[in-house]
Length: 444
Ligand SMILES: C[S@@+](CC[C@H](N)C(=O)[O-])C[C@H]1O[C@@H](n2cnc3c(N)ncnc32)[C@H](O)[C@@H]1O
Image (cartoon, rainbow, N blue to C red; front, top):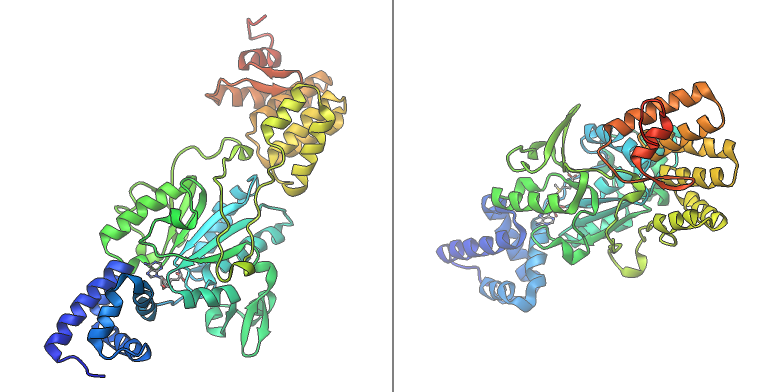
């Protein structure tokens, strides 16, 4: 192979680097000229090109898109490890995980530029441990890890790591979550469940991998934006904002926090970590969350995919409410039980069960169901109101007064004028106020 003469080589390198930056966003490649040159030479030889000119032609021929991606893969930096920046996971545990307990469907997370997968798996482990430590049941996490380097993703799919990836963790930790594989460690199956991988270039449209606006609870995008210029980061910030649901979080790397670039988010400081929140009304009641269709992404090969569990779709809340209002209590009860088997922590199913139990005259069970609902979501207005009315009906004056005070306070603070569901049907807010407090209301 003939090497290019030095001036020609300089020009060649410049145009090659331009091409690589346009395709990958990694502007830092401009400062890595020698590495780019070395990788290019290596690949030119490996792919049997007669010279660098030949190879450049190959790279710029659209049908050879793979050749360019292959070169980019040689130049990515996949530095990562388990529980990287532990303060992030501590903040998730104390500030974010508790809010997921009452979610009615899978929590959808994107780990963008996840390298070999330590980040998405760390999150899966942290969530499982959070639940186990509290003996709680919680929704599934559906975690999509993406990267543009297919070799990294291959390793992520296999989940086999050298001890270097656990550099900050104890031997005990490694043995709890991994099985030894020769001189390496493979993550145990339960901690891989719900995590899937797919190749994706952050410069491309996320819809190409099935990501839908307003569908994500968290986006991790750590330690990759450092390679991009401001215009790219700004475009990404807008994309992330669109993809998150209101109340969802963007988690950048520690050195990537930037109030100006992420100005559409609210920066929230936790001990040692900053998260960016998409403001807007979080779901008023978890069961009303409108999950956008989530195509479980797959990385390689399709038959090895671990499917993301969908929220049960057999009977919607509206259908169950219609059953209750039409007096089809047995059907409603069956449907609610099915939901509860999968989503014990969803407050709304407990509330609806309470209604059915009240209609079918099992007041003790109804009280317990309303209380379970309120335990899981203490602001659930319909449960507050119905618990108060039930206790009044049962003549449990002291408990009824307490429950009444809570319900009336919530009604006062509520801006909603929607009717509330009660055993006798949908009842107006005004009528409810009167029922709870007949003396202070002129309502007939
Ligand atoms: C330093 S690693 C970060 C891994 C992980 N997020 C962490 O913080 O531990 C950066 C990753 O970004 C990926 N990357 C670089 N440019 C990318 C792009 N345009 N699209 C997707 N991934 C990219 C690289 O392949 C690499 O795996």
